Image (cartoon, rainbow, N blue to C red; front, side, top):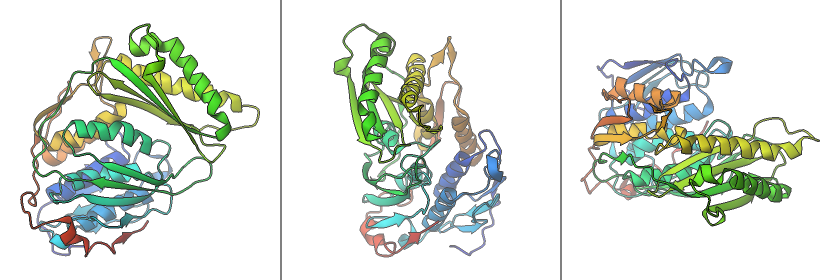
Length: 408
């Protein structure tokens, strides 16, 4: 870590603001690492039960971005409620990012791999490195209250590609779960950084729903019941989903995967529109699994997820609630005004979620961008100093990074 004193006063962020959880920390760390603006976050995760503070997953993000940006860090400990993060103004080429090769971010618990990705992805995308970066993260792929790897692959990545981010390849080596017996999995993401500024993007035309994909991960002997419940649901709600009375069968695809535990039930429904938008809702069942009540689990899961998806479809927006907050950083860093239409209910614009409002607030505090009521933001047009420097390649810096192991 850098030890040279920095004279710039850190930007103070109160960790209890708005959502008051890990979202604030992740967005702030990513923007700090990119812009080299120091931050001081107090009352970290102050609205969370159990006293808040850094959990292992959050510490992993701090450590990774700290090494990548050669930052001077105070407070990087489990349960720490205050952290000061001061990126170096100059980062040595050999320490600029964890890159190609078998570089791994290790977690010994099923902390969400996708929340770690959420924190580090903007740094990687805007790093200016000239070759693809392969990064393997150990942790949870299917974790309560976190985006699943299935949602990331089917909703987030296609949308990022639509707005101008190069395709991200995902290889699931093994799944990690928070339900049933806690299990640590592993995923490799292959990411190609941008080679120029991200242009402003417009997600304004939702179009009609043309297809729905159902992904079921559950005990092996539940496949038939899941498929029957879903088919019954689509029959009843066909017109509300597709807007007509035609046959839904040709527009619904269902995939089933064995969850390897009798207490793991997961369902993801993704609606695809005529303009290529993706709306997704899911649920990793986290209620009690008791003998004699097992037959009620599947109808409960199908009803909740389909209710949630219908609510997303009926507001007419181009993004679902969870996708909207993950686009905030990219709006803030793009060149020009990007617009994301979140839909209307009863002729009133849908408000962003607390997570989205939190991300917007952090972006305003750190890089002075404003989000309007209609989901628009004029970004700063961020460009890495590495862009167009063809002598900086992933191969050049991989040698010094292959042995970096971040454990938590």
